[in-house]
Length: 148
Image (cartoon, rainbow, N blue to C red; front, side, top):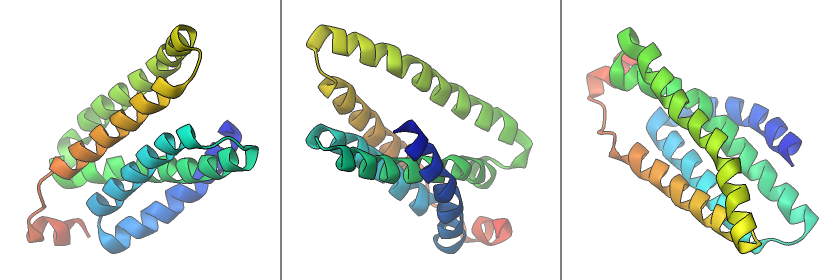
């Protein structure tokens, strides 16, 4: 499954980059984060191997696709002078989530005997990421044309 997600993420990076160039980084980022959240939530409703692989493709494409968009958002909203700091902080938070997620998921599985709460929690975190991305104010028209 992880291999499928990783391969799908390679294509997602290209696809979402093209979409962000065409439609703007914020709407594409929001859409990608929403697709990720919905895909994680959908794991609660699948049971066949083919369905898991299909979700792995969808999730992997969205996950891989949004990753490069963070750099574009950092540049557009914070400018190039503090891009390293902004990206460093964002990557630190995401790395903490990736490090703690499996530990928390294992703990939840040990307590409940199922991964249900892991998927519910991941879905909620995904919706939180969508809310944070939506909270970014629209860029002034001058800033959008200067970034292009």
